[in-house]
Amino acid sequence: MSGEAPRQDDAIESQAIAAVKGGDHHAYDYLVGKYMKRVVSVAWGIVRNATDAEDLAQEAFVKAFESIDRFRSGEPFGPWIYRITTNLALDVMKHRTKFRHEELSGQEPAARRDAAELPALAGEIGRRIDQAIESLPAMQRVVARLFLVEEFGHTEIATMTGLAEGTVRSHLSLARKKLREQLADIYGEGHE
Amino acid sequence: MSEDRFLDQLRADARALRYEIDPAGASRLRARIRARLDEPTVAQFLAAWFRPLAASLSALALIAGIAITVLERNQNISLADNIEISIGGDVFSVGD
Picture 1 (cartoon, helix red, strand yellow):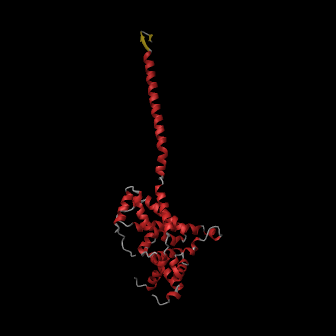
Picture 2 (cartoon, helix red, strand yellow; picture 1 turned 45 degrees about the horizontal axis):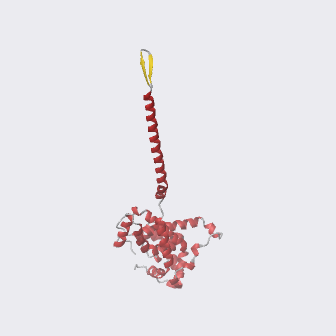
Picture 3 (cartoon, chains in turn green, blue; picture 1 turned 90 degrees about the vertical axis):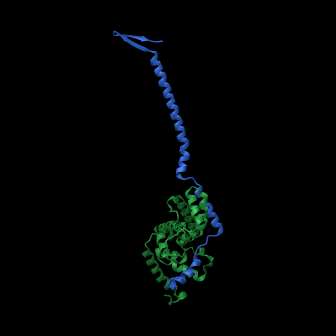
């Protein structure tokens, strides 16, 4: 993933978008099938709860469908649906922060600490990395996860989160410093 | 690869943390999205309710219009049936 301007190089995707714009609902299935897994992963990385992530993915796809007329033809669908997903997930995150007292009082499950849903392939190093990322402040955590786990570039993350690219780099730099401290026993002190 | 070896290594290891929705969940989600897209929009929903209502009101307006026209015509006929003529201050009525 790099900061290059996105371009559409999937002919079927272009045709599907054109068909959806022309009123063919079924053509949207192609876009859902192509991007669904990544969309759910992006959402899960922010809300850390499978049910919420699936709900968010559904809302993101419906929202994208309803505003497909505003989508510029010739551009890839991915960055657009990822941006919608990230915005919705950040809204959920802000809402949770606002009503955190409910979570702390035990009336609501501690969804963010749902480590049981971690991918089975994560392994011990994965779990340590996950814990380290989760210990970061909110936006550093989101940026770090999008950069490290989802492997988006700085420009893509800026577009998805609505942050300036410089702010993304700043968050990542701060996150890097903290992660390096926390994971020093795994990666050593020599990495620069 | 960037020049930051730490981030590169971390990225390689963190890739395993991507969440993978299971096939059953993916099928369920596809079905839910399809169902939502097939739901009528607010405009379609309102149109479905208002179309018969508008048709009924139009029919009533048409019937009322026809009724008024018929009544007015009958009134004109009845007026035309009773003509009054005034000659030299005397009024003469020409009836049936």
